[in-house]
Length: 208
Image (tube, rainbow, N blue to C red):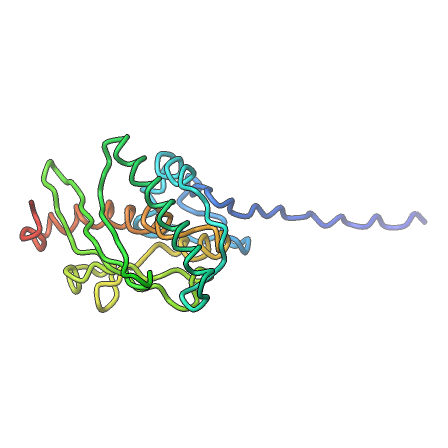
């Protein structure tokens, strides 16, 4: 009697997200753990242009937070170098959309951000505080003037980022910084939310 051939277990190939991977055409993205999750509002703007832009932003090398003394000073130098590069790239492509600066300690940042919709510029205050766990965990971006005007926002005007942002940040820490968060976090959020807010007539006072 011939032995019964053993069934070969088919191995499921899991494709982990690369740092700059796009969602699949059916609206799903393979997350770092290998599971799939539907993309949320704002992922539509993580297109090839956005990813091409973020690839041009210098990656940071210093792994230091606000409590790390001289190492934090070195980290801040890298943050500003990356931001300068990002701003220059935006201006070269006629896509200047924010200004930002920090306090002396580099822990509190504030500025302005704007979005042009139907030839009208809508401008908002921008702010955030760097947590002590940074850069292992990202900061929370705040647009305080929009607090309570959209469901895609937490109390205090903290924007609700796509579910893919934090896993992407964790995978790239400590190489991602302020410029990367603005490019992959705030820019897509504004592109998704500002047109909706305009249609609802709740941000007319921010038109410039």
